[in-house]
Amino acid sequence: MSANDRPAAGQPPTATYESAFLKACRREPVPHTPVWFMRQAGRSLPEYLKVREGIPMLESCTRPELVAEITLQPVRRHGVDAAIYFSDIVVPLKAIGVDLDIKPGVGPVVEKPIRTRADLAQLRDLTPDDVSYVTDAIKLLTAELGETPLIGFAGAPFTLASYLVEGGPSKNHEHTKALMYGDPQLWADLLDRLAEITSAFLKVQIEAGASAVQLFDSWVGALAPADYRRSVMPASTKVFESVAGYGVPRIHFGVGTGELLGLMGEAGADVVGVDWRVPLDEAARRVGPGKALQGNLDPAVLFSSTEAVEAKTREVLDAAAGLEGHIFNLGHGVLPSMDPDALTRLVEDVHTRTAR
Ligand SMILES: Cc1c2[nH]c(c1CCC(=O)O)Cc1[nH]c(c(CCC(=O)O)c1C)Cc1[nH]c(c(CCC(=O)O)c1C)Cc1[nH]c(c(C)c1CCC(=O)O)C2
Image 1: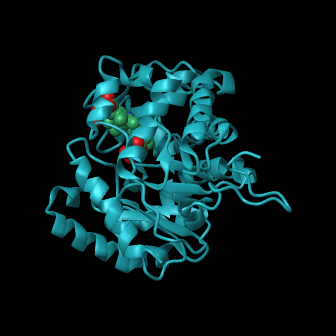
Image 2: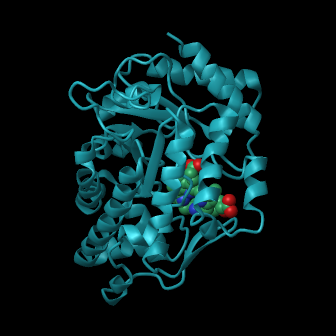
């Protein structure tokens, strides 16, 4: 039995299955509110900068020992309740041969943006052999992590499409929206292709031993609910349905998605990630019953005094007090200039305040 399996009839559950993080995802009672941070591995940690020295980002994602080391660093340092697999949302696209790179300080840049039907040919199916380093790294990791669960992840179809269509990071998503509104059939076909690739990539991670998965739709908050429902939700739903049979919790997160929280849950998430703009009690009303919530301290709060961080943390925990399942996180990722000690203190503070 792998760590992510539900216990078979008559078998005791694994310690991983019984971890606070997976219990909270399942909305079961927990010994303390579990904590992890989006982008917890990375440039805020001196030990990360040291092992990454001279190795380009995308190359580092293909080296299993390095991936395992970087994934473990924040678990060792902060005592977080879950690890997140070190990779990037564009890794599966690179693996199928899309000509792209991650430029330091910029983000993913795509050589030939996808804007016509002919351009879709850049997107072939992903097979497990394309990403054998992912399987290798996760095997190393589950052995090292013990009972700490490993979260696998992928970019959601809309956010991946935004990078592919724009050719890089974008504020207004103008080419993306032009395609979505102007050629709905090509857009639907593009998102469906991306849903297939994303599903295949998540399956590789779950089969190798990931205990939960998070689908990042970071930039989907740029859309109105009706457009989300019509033009994005079918592809995201397809991804969630494709991994439903594994029984691992499925987390869905985006930034500025206050108006979309209900639909993002409806798309098939078990846990809905919330940024800092909507308090968790209000988010729970928008999402409705039957789902856990993850979030939502404003990351920028970490730049203020310890007392201010504690006060804002209390606000988040108070708003979460009536929830069935709460996983504490930031409302978006750790920033490179954050003091890692402030993050360690935050983990301790949440654990202490919520100990039952
Ligand atoms: C939108 C998005 C991307 N990548 C990701 C998202 C969704 C999450 C979010 O909304 O923040 C996801 C991601 N990218 C990375 C992780 C690592 C796992 C973790 O600790 O959370 C995760 C979960 C590593 C990374 N991905 C990247 C880095 C920095 C590159 C480096 O360290 O050299 C890391 C650690 C590069 C990247 N890749 C991307 C961006 C915007 C950047 C930052 C560009 C920059 O500021 O340099 C695209």
